[in-house]
Length: 89
Image (cartoon, rainbow, N blue to C red; front, side, top):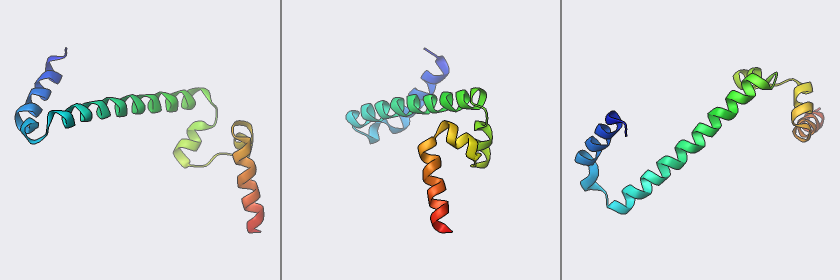
């Protein structure tokens, strides 16, 4: 076990343990671990897309992708967007 993490946990216990029932603390630890797993996976997926799916970095940074990219990677979404644009005209 990492001694620094252990000290942080000990500080939390001394300062806040008396404020919460043990069931709440256990539940919070479970939620914290689950959130960490989700966040780690989200980061890994973004890294995968950024390096191996051409055009993705631009979409992540600017919030826009080309119509060609959208048709190739998300054809149903691309059709929906094009239909919405045609309806506005």
